[in-house]
Image (cartoon, rainbow over all chains, first blue to last red; front, side, top):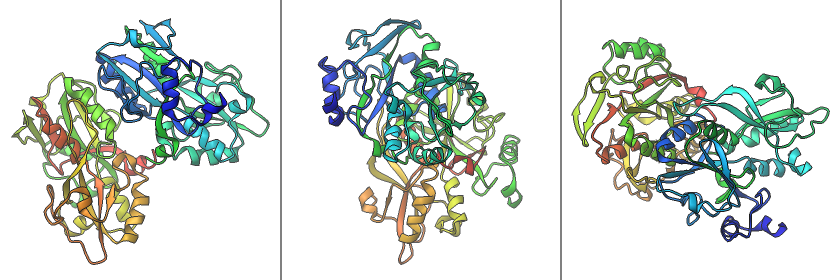
Length: 263
Length: 263
């Protein structure tokens, strides 16, 4: 996989399209913005778009397709969300029914695809600033937790914020706030640091998604709004059809991390 | 009007609701965020929300109501967009049919209200930094121009960017970039400075909306994405019913300018 670290977004997508890549994407096409995928039928699209607009920290939208269109033309012209991710999850009425590597047979003229920013972008920026990203050091998935903080609801969608956590010293956390604040379209600055109980998290060693990581003496947990939130919320509403990427198996765009700096 | 300068957003809205305020709102409730209003039927709401998502510089959304709901509950709980603006414009099939001070008789269960950030917020920040805001000095409306820059279209909505212009010295312009960059939800940093022809603007002394202002020796024109853009675009699509605020007669929210700093 090492050579894919320096591949372009387009090369990763073509490899996934041809069936040559079915595994997770962290560390691939370094510097290219990766995105979460959520596909819903058109009759829920206004509500889901509204939910994202009301909750920009967990749901920073990078691109939204027209009904029936599979090309996210603003972040990856020529790409096809039906084939260009390594692996998908298909839900019917809230139940996981398949994990295909291609969703062409599920595609319909009324489906709308939402591409949502992902923390891999700011993790690259943290690493470049010599700040620790513990789950990368440990070679595992980032720990994610359900919180007791309700998202701003819409009529069809409601649920609590999901956060990701990275342990740091207070001094490193201050620097991370400054760095991530430059990337509002990939979750931006942390939403909390310190006491997990303030978010309703009972036990840091038992994340709801991903893997637990070590918090060392002198470190505090730092919490970011997480792109799993919109998926979890969409799933709770149990639409007849909902398609997402398989966690960790992201859409790799043509955008470069630096293009998301600032606004 | 002078005492209204220090009124709260809620006081301004109540005054408009009671018929005691039918004039323009610049300078009222100083420090409270004012917003553009666009109301469209639900069957166009997804498309209009998508247009705003794709064009965040001219269309920074502050709040969007549920279909049929008149309360923008996130920026002004208890407010009513049908009565709380001083004056409205009602368009049918693209034609201006009425300028009422109340739209209750036009309201329908399928209408969705969009509240869109407005430059008054960053103008306050410019004034506080002792930067010139020429149209305020001259006591006239800001000059606005149609450009040759297409917005990112959706199936239903397309059109070119409208910009507002404020003349400054290059040194002041640099400072304005820094200040306005802190306010991405009210149009953010300028999109251009210098040669108007680069935007397809033939004559600065003939704005398409608002009033011309003096550009003094040593000054360059500085251009910002303008909240008139989404109105102009919505109007071009000639929906059966479209309601906006009358220009300058804005919705005054409970948000304070400083709450829009950063993300």
